[in-house]
Image (cartoon, rainbow, N blue to C red):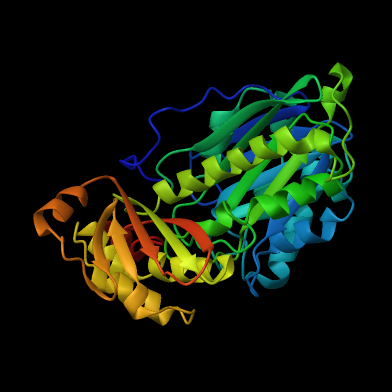
Length: 413
């Protein structure tokens, strides 16, 4: 957890409203460091539904495997999140730790272990001592309140420089419902069906199938469209919980993803995911520039995504951005290596709206001083037009600075 907040941090932090049926509590359990808040417990009312998407890493953490095994029931009563230790690559010890943590949480909340969901973030390869949750979770269950959203977001931070929260209020039928979300992530970010850790809560009465559908479609152009360093975490977890308590105020129960009454809610849900995903990109380790990569004129959207990610993940492109150098030759390189259809002589490239290359050569109107000036902006847009079709996509990343190397060189020290 850094003491220096990223210069890209949002200046407008929302007031997070309470969500009926959700209570939160945080504590310092000494997972890795003493006297640092490192445990979050969320307690949900009976009847809460759950959905989730997780890393596609072939080396997933023990909590990811635990959640996958429990997700099919579609019910949740508790969420336990710890920072400081990822409980990944920990073998049988890791499985035993998740089982013990779930038992402690279930006793504290008064539910089945099958209704407990877990997530861990931090160092990979070190055993997590599940006994450290004993007593802590019981106290948290008793003290949990509906208004600890910022504390909860801070509790799950590792190298993050600011807590990441988002909220939206929307009508479902004629009833107002709320969506709250939090996320953590600053490094090892190239999500594949999720993000490092993110949790979304709502009081809308949605079935687990509907919630799962919203998540699966929602991550594609939000969390799956960001990258900081091209590394997909072993712990990527995105869970959504719907308490359904708004039904008491007249909100209709939604059991089909195709229900037309879901349209406004789905849009708001997507906006919360997008907000959180952008905050993760803004908090990239050592970042000083938010970088938006737009690829248009590709043969397909899928092709545009691959080319955009090739650009966004290129260390040469990212270091050029850090140095405020509009080195469009590196963008050409990244387009060419993506393995997707591209025609050099149809290619054009722009930085912050200024075209620097066209038709396979430097733009005739190129002005070095003009371009250098716009590269000083905290947000840089790289737009590539391929001229081959209608495929378009957009991804977010950040620059690559010396600070990124320093943070990761000292991470376990």
